[in-house]
Amino acid sequence: MVKSAQTTKVVTGKVRFSYVNAFQPRAAVEGQDPKYSVCVLIPKTDKRTLARIKAAIEAAKEKGKERWGGKVPAMLKTPLRDGDVERPDQPEFAGCYFLNASSKFKPGVVDADLNPVLDPSEFYSGCYGRASLNFYPYSVSGNRGIAAGLNNLQKLEDGEPLGGRVSAQSEFGSFEDDEEDDFLG
Image 1: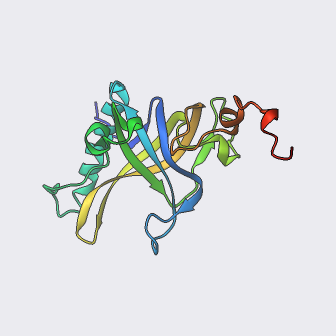
Image 2: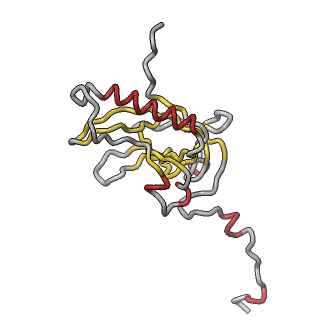
Image 3: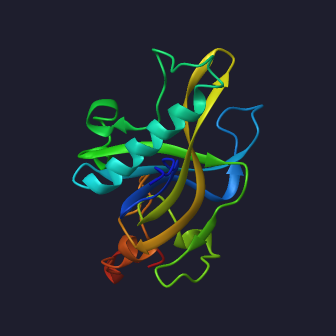
């Protein structure tokens, strides 16, 4: 029996999205090429997704050997990071690993029923869903590592918007008009 090559592609379980740029590409630094991107927050309890991501990173390391002179560099950068350690000041990162994924090409964005999401306000930082990712090796300007490519996104459910933005309904829903303070009268 021939052992199949490990895949570098992963479709996550249910994750939370942050720093969403799925409809309009943006340059991380002025002068760089604009890219579509998303930060994927993976609950530490999702052992299955984390195991698949770690296996895909290992597969990407194997593919990178030819690019890196036949061996994996000792100080290799990898995309999976611990939110509790690296973002202790951001509550949404607590209890999660995270990674940033990007692409020069616009990702497909669908809802739970696989219908295209066309309105950018429907897929936002804070919503929950799945991501299709591809891990690949890079060697640029002396930096070597594994990066996460963004393929497609699926929204499964709404969540509290991140970044301090609140909905108009929540902001004005409990507002009571006090006629006694009529500024005209």
